[in-house]
Amino acid sequence: MTNTDPSRNVCIRVVLHLDMDAFFTSVEQADNPDLRGKPVVIGQSLRGVASAASYEARQYGIRSAMPIVQARKLCPHAVFLPGRMSRYREVSGQVMEVMRSLCPVVEQASVDEAYADVSGMGRVCGPPENLARRLKAEILGRTGLTCSVGIAPNKFLAKIASDWNKPDGLTVIRPDDVPAFLQALPLGKIPGVGKHMLEELGGMGVTSIPDVLARPRQYWIDALGKRGAFLHNRALGIDDSPVTPESEAQSCSAENTLDRDTLDRELLERWLLAQAERVGREVRALNKKGLTVTLKIKFHDFSSITRSKTLPRPTDITAEIYAAARRLLAAEKLPRPVRLIGLGVSNFRAMQAELPLAADPRRGRNRLLDQAMDRILDKFGKGSILRADVASKETEGTGDLLSQKNRTTGGE
Image 1 (spheres, one colour):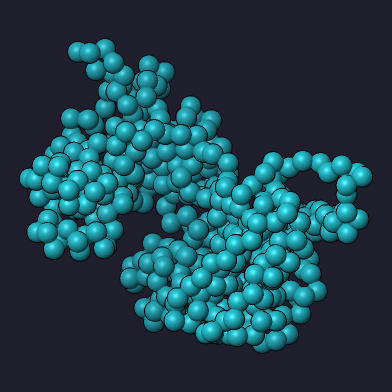
Image 2 (image 1 turned 120 degrees about the horizontal axis):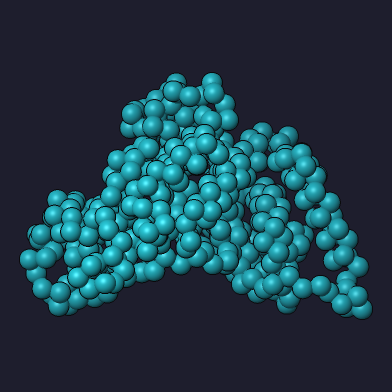
């Protein structure tokens, strides 16, 4: 791949996409050598789904988002782990630090993948393949983990390329190769073309990219609107979206799938308290305060509701987050047993010191408590300290509160 077009003396765009290989399970195998070579699945609750599966587990047909019950049937001898998001984020930070040290413009897409615009770097680094090999080597040396890299003229092709030769792959799609590459590319490989869209296209007699290009662009706009324009662009290999350095997190949230469906409000409140602990800590780590608290409930029939409350003033205090979520829960009649519960904080504001004369003494005590707990958790790790209401749940025979599926969004 060249970095410039001599005939026009213009820079050709070069985008690199990095994707860690089976990231969560690879971290577990790197931290515990006894797990290497074994099928490993992140997810334990029989009511939950697999968050990740090692390549060894994938050989048995296990995939992420698969129900744990099904995964256990496919591979009873697999090692099922609860997952350690704090550890995964720590390693992710190391990976991104390496990437930013080598690439001028980096956009982190998730905890285990990122884009980099390396256009014009050829005079300094040589072919982009050289940069990719150095990136892979430094990540391996820093973390002990492999990654796959795709290089292409735009983001969507680079993402496809990184998945082309996993694990530990390096795939380059040169500008001149794009038309031939797309001719043979399955429609489902285009990011954004999912199962439902494939079924819709199949009903129209479209099963390949050549089928898309056989019809004019206006046909697709008339048939599918913005989705049609998107599809036609991708079939032509067009993607003008820039590599944008990551913006700040816009929300933090956590949710748990329960071991058993329940209508026990006291139990649900305890889940909310544990989630408020997690989310409050995340918000404080971002040095932000949130103005909106959201409650999420999924019932046993998989129907779901969300309810939000805007607070009179932004907060990062666990007790205030919990109190708002608890009031939202109290306002719901719960017509059916609850399968999943979660809460989130959004509508962030920058952290500002409160005026002493306006400070609420109770608010000050709660903030000091949060700060003390944060320091203990930073030093001794997850589970080193719990509020009494959270700890007491373990005596109720419903499983370890902290081992359930827990997701936090915003930075990932």
